[in-house]
Length: 237
Image 1 (tube, helix red, strand yellow):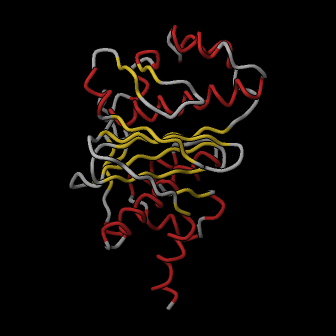
Image 2: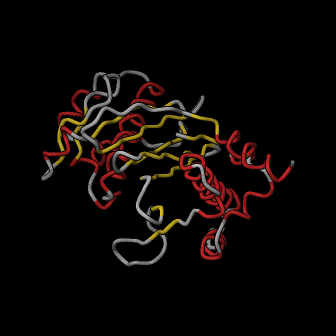
């Protein structure tokens, strides 16, 4: 896992984007959203190159929506590995890489404008809502809800389903328990292979990552700003 605040990316990061990626960035109307996308794309290429010992300018990413085939789906590295995932919220951009299996990452900013009570039935199943009812305090409920959300979205991003599958199809342990998948409607085999871990994206944020692999997975969280510094050194020298 690599984390970065978009403002910490150096001015040359856009050089890593291809022409289609620049066009995609230009489609964002809000400058903050455009910067998050471009920084996430650049950091992903740097992370892939760092893991493989290559040149980030040689990393090719492909995005193809499984529904419309347009280039706005989740990113994939040309050649298939490593498996990758990106997420961004507020001033946090996260990039995940895994060689052993599909990976999904999600980060969410803890903001009071989230209407937890109206969203519960769309995110939590009946048993999960019953357990959630024991959580008291507005802030505690908000953080617990977003913990559930990030865990579930990371699972759905790892499977490639995204939000095309209702979050209520995914059943997890409680938000204050170890992250684990208990059930997935129609896909019971995922219970034994979906490994979920909570992340530490920084104060005011919650995050989770899921890897689909029968092998044990260890998560390292790294500073994405360091990746840009390291990549810049050869040119500076």
